[in-house]
Length: 425
Image (cartoon, rainbow, N blue to C red):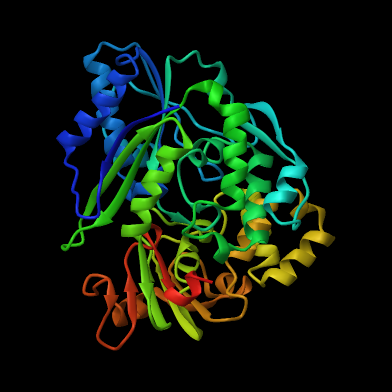
């Protein structure tokens, strides 16, 4: 197992031509550009990952080498399938590429399981179930010369820091793999995991890779993104390899550029959700996840969500969120113990825990498509989108502190904000 490319730094800016050269270098180290390739990039909900451009560069390298098969399987996990417009916006015009849709409920290859004894150990006895491991059947039965996972290394609420093996095991994973890994992260404690690589969920995915995925020889192409002084997204690092160490190296840079530490808690935070990415609270609650370790007790989090239309990307998860709401960990765990529909959808239960403030601060969603009654029915406050934008116009705000003392975040999915004291606990 190897790292083929490890290039980056806090002040590095990797240009398109440098990306091309680094990707080409990695493929040459593997023996050249294969004729039959499966690329697994994130979907539109990771628009700022630069995975779209990396996928286009891979396509151009493959096309130049007269390849025969270039399949793309977006790692949507539980998300809605991508539309043609989203595919065009994310990846551009790739005329010879064939797109496939992952379904986390069907078309899976079952490998085995992570044993309950291991789960009990990594969760310090909080859970003792086994976790079945399944991924999209295409990875095993597609007869590809090379499978390439493309994605961004970034702090994450379920696993600690996203990407690496997660892009495959969750992005193309099956129902129980997703359900039980997400619930493990929620029960183990989101604030214990975020921004860290040695977490219970990461250990489970590492186990699954070592015992099941390793045989597939997947190449992981991982970006570390940041904003420059103008606010433009730039690539600070590109890491390419097939092992856990490549991810760990990328995660070190992500911690350095994607985490903002504060010395005092924030009493008012305003977050904007890009409507191209965020259409559900399943995704939009990144505004909560990524700021909760910085929020003051009794503080206010205002989420400007012009694209919000639903709670869950998956219809059954949407129904469960509407039914049970974001009521805090004790209430949710009790509901899981008493209701088989939550026991069968543990990722939904995990999300209900993640999306609750545990009564510590107030969340106000400013929406157009979801009504006041809908927002308030799940436990949040509601405000008129037009009225909130009139007071907090995203076009005039700057990331960080603004006049009036509130803290603004334009892209919550691109970082983690935390009190130094709270993160070090």
